[in-house]
Image 1 (cartoon, rainbow, N blue to C red):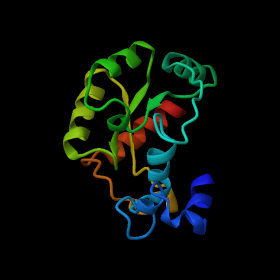
Image 2 (image 1 turned 180 degrees about the vertical axis):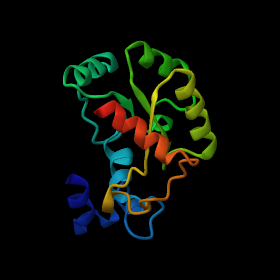
Image 3 (image 1 turned 30 degrees about the vertical axis):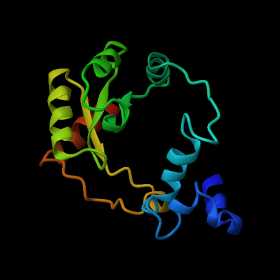
Image 4 (image 1 turned 120 degrees about the vertical axis):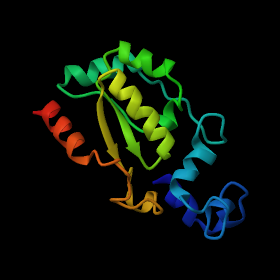
Length: 159
């Protein structure tokens, strides 16, 4: 991984983009993820444009493959806005990740209400990625007592 190599390279220890990501730096909590956001994201020094398919095409492709289209951690993607979600629902979005390490309890309640209103499948997860996100722990997401109902609904949708 490029981020790992860049962070290990001794010459980079003084580089102004790398220094905050190293131990003791202000962005060292998630150095690999923060490397992307600080160095490779749109508008950053190492950004390279990538052509993406549209959300509608993605949903159609998922459905054509027999899958269920679920919007992951919407707080990161659309914030607490209803219009982008309504547009995705119009494209036949099947579900939304309501419970996430990216969501406050207020955001989870917001998405829970939207999911119920639009009859979307609800999912949740920690977004644990091992060493990539070392501050996230498995089993720490508050599902507001809905774990069994969500599990049943997801399994029913899959099988």
